[in-house]
Picture 1: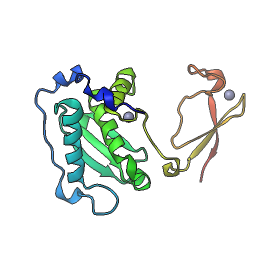
Picture 2 (picture 1 turned 135 degrees about the vertical axis):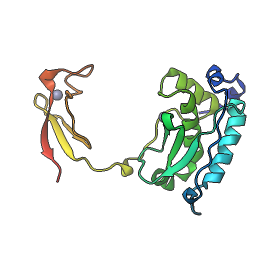
Picture 3 (picture 1 turned 60 degrees about the vertical axis):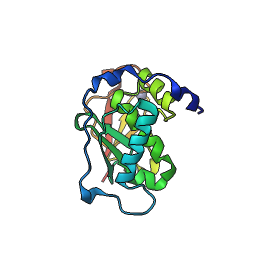
Length: 185
Ligand SMILES: [Zn+2]
Ligand SMILES: [Zn+2]
């Protein structure tokens, strides 16, 4: 989408929350080694550049690191003020790294993907959906099913009380409670 021209709009008001930006540098051993992905030093440079460009330099600098386990493209961990970027995702889609970084920067201001988040993501030209690639998804451990419509629900984690999303789309309904069909392996 073409949102570049919107970036000249006023900076968001929530920035006032951060009166004392903290700068946290990553430990040496976490520097990414060569290859496709930018080094952490480079990511911090890009963070600063986007911060100045889109947020009047007022976003507090979080810790930025790569994760080898993260299946989604990126993650912002609020209580640690940490942006985590998936190495596996970006080894497949290296062209997405700036978009992911900007998306996670918006999460510093807006934790959920709500209307405010989308507005802000559009303003700075970042995608507002969380990205993930299905080849990164791990196989399910449990297959649940609905006794009424027989639909199956493969899941990684145990479901304590969930009902069928097809028979009871809006809320939990014990009549359509999912039952365990198979435990994989
Ligand atoms: Zn997100
Ligand atoms: Zn059902």
